Length: 105
Image 1 (cartoon, one colour):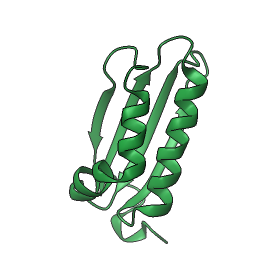
Image 2 (cartoon, rainbow, N blue to C red):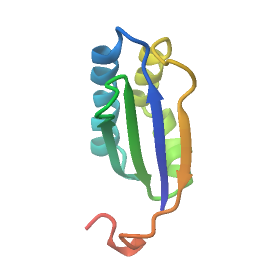
Image 3 (cartoon, rainbow, N blue to C red):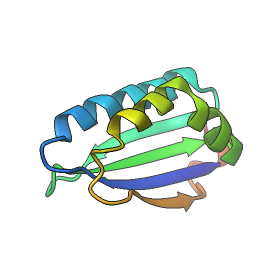
Image 4 (cartoon, rainbow, N blue to C red):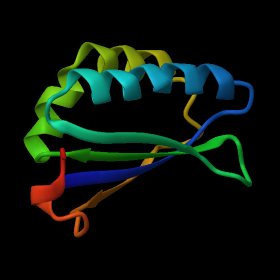
């Protein structure tokens, strides 16, 4: 499995529209991408302008090729590009639990 944990800081005044656009990407990823096993959107309880994305894909190709070329992702990226307060911070991960065989059950 290939997973990502992304921290996004949003410019003040753009939070609601950023969340709306991000929900479209998350729903599209979960519903329309067979290689996407999980796409969570989380809000920082201490800073509503900080959002975390937790994404799990079958492999790196499912993220690099299928996800990043999906219409919902390209729409999201174009929509939110001016609302980032600095560059998003991405950590690439490998899942330990649940084991690979249990994903998708």
